[in-house]
Image (cartoon, rainbow, N blue to C red; front, side):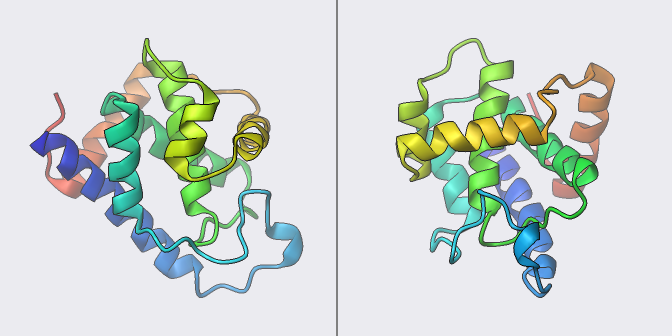
Length: 161
């Protein structure tokens, strides 16, 4: 459990650094997506990650994969700004997609909606939007995963199982 908590801290720190920079940017209305809320949620990224980890029981690899997915989104759609008004929804969907792709067991979207604090209708729409933004390409090459994991370990000085 200690390793998992350190992984969540590392992921949260990385995302906090990103949104600290992007929250200062002026975002044009057409750069916003369905993921953008009117205001940022009050829950911190770290607490949100802990909540997701606690209730989804997903593998640690899903958090690494989710971060890779978020990086891919930024590469494919440079106009898409991840900030405090959208990071929670993007993070939720990246983790849910990682769970569905990586783990053997997963829950229904209704459960993930409850865990993530969104409506059932919203999670279905967000899932479709996420898949479209990703061009339905969720596969991650094993070598790329291990390279990414290594960089994450170096960043957070943690060990993965």
